[in-house]
Image 1: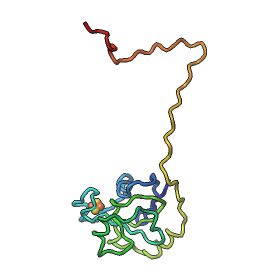
Image 2: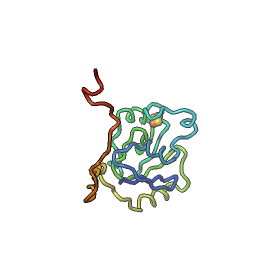
Image 3: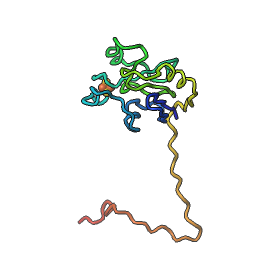
Image 4: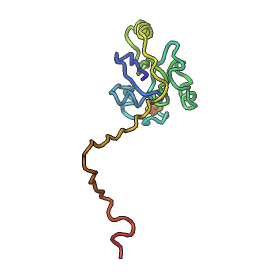
Length: 158
Ligand code: FES
C-alpha cells in the first residue's frame, strides 16, 4: 500500500492506491485545516481552498494530476501546493499539511523526509478474496437449515 508521510505530524500512514488525500488525513486524525478551514470548509468540494498541502521534490506523479478546480484556485500559490480534497494518492508521497503556517527547520525537514525511502506500494487495490465454504465433515447429517424467506411461490395462497 502507498504510504503518505505527513511531514508536520511526523507520521507515515498507509492508504489504498487512488484514495483521496483529504479523506485519508481526516480518517487518521491529521489536522488539515488552519483556523479558517476549521471554522468552515466546503467538505471536500474544492471551493474553500483551505485544505492546502505542499508536495515538494520530484513527486509530481505521486498524486493525481491537477484538477481544473485546482488550476483555477491555486493560481497565486506556490507550484508545489495542492488541494488535499482534489488529490488522489497514486504512489507513496511526502506532504506538508498547512504549508501556509510554515515549518520550523522546514528545508532540513524536507531534505530528511525525502531522503528516507518510502515503499512505492502497489498500484491497484488488492483483489477481494473469495469466501471458501467449508465442506461438511464425513458422516455429518445433511444440513437442516431453514430459511426465513416465508412461503415459496404458490404456498400459503388460496
Ligand atoms: S476542503 Fe474545501 S477546497 Fe478542499
